[in-house]
Image (cartoon, rainbow, N blue to C red):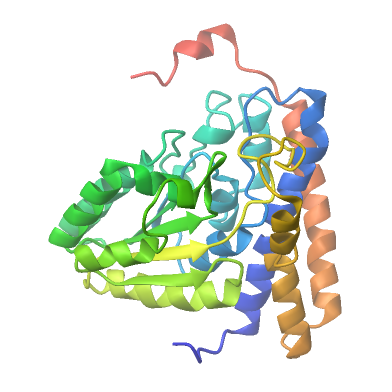
Length: 324
């Protein structure tokens, strides 16, 4: 699997999504101070490789469950930017009809059944969905993304136990960025190796460089295929780093929560930079290929923003719709 040759078309597709996530969130950073986006935003910048590497192995009907930091997962799964921007602006054309904001996006057309701001809240829902898939024999796999903070929750362990007991078609992906809000991992967890928790539940567990999309793609392919063929769940710990503060467009440096040197070291490990250097050095893609992707996405971002800004807000009576 380590020697897997990745098709040029897949390489281009992954680069497209890496850049798309980055440009979408850079636009949020640019516009957020205008205070027209009234919802909190938890930005994914620095972690893009994880979502892209996994979702490149998923079919449209395969399920993805996410958390409050969900933009990258939705985009990598193929959700259009227009309803996402509209949701940030609270418009009726948003993917949650303006009611969910950044933390509660939903797009069932791409098998994203909802995201949750509750830490660890999506994990048991994902397990229930995997159980349904197994009972229905529909060969749909579930990938659930969560942070290292969710490992502090009891439901994480309950979910791994049940998934392993029933050999469910699910891949647990811990995006370990080493901070839960502003609390470092070493202040919360006695064992820093989250992937080793899998041993207790008799499932495979591996640690991967969360900034290397090619390594992630290969690992994801192995364990997604494993789940689809009935071999049960697995736990992937992808070590990465978020560049921005827990919530909002700033960094933690000016607030004194993180060291400037630490942030700079991780920014230098940028997943886009790492991918670009690899494909150009090995003649897998040409510079013009990368430039074309950049131009295409600039246009898509602007069109999506225009769509959001010209869409209407929900009416007062819409408050009571879709409430069960």
